[in-house]
Amino acid sequence: MSEAGDALRKRVLFEAWMAEHQPFSVQFAQKGEAIDRRTVLARLTTLAGRQRAPEYVYVLSERRPEEITPAYVGKARSPVTRWTQHLAGLTKGEGSYARWRQRFLREGHETVRFDLDLLLVGETQVQFPPLPGFPTTIGAVEYQLVGLAAGAYPLRLLNHEGQAR
Image 1 (cartoon, rainbow, N blue to C red):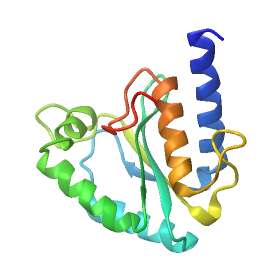
Image 2: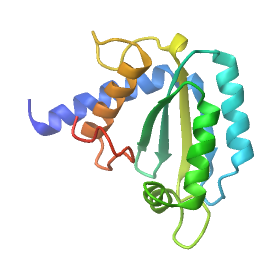
Image 3: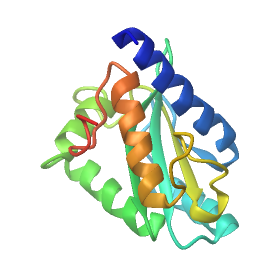
Image 4: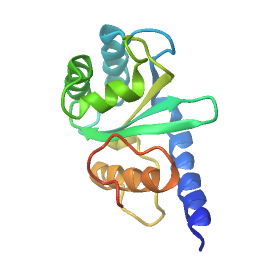
């Protein structure tokens, strides 16, 4: 299979998994506005509360003019705690979060460059694995999503691990 064909196959698998789990998506921030921590955490609390799972996988995506692009894939037992950490890191903009600021925020501003959405899927809600025949544990799903996104989209994930999958 050609490199372009492989990338397309990965994109189809990634997007099919995302579409099936779309009911577990919330708006993270709107283009041109600052990220409102309270709103984000309240939406995550509600979404996690509806699912009540022992562990979650999440995908932060940008709605760019030409497509929806995954930016970060992660997992957490407590998504609200994890996103409290992510938001604090984004505010400080130090270490790996400097890349987050550069990618998400307009230069010299605290406003978002594109609409951002966050998909949060609890272990009990995983309908099928991103890669047919693979496990549906949260760790396995995260690994599969990172690999698919890294191979299917031209913009690299902000995850510092998993880029060569």
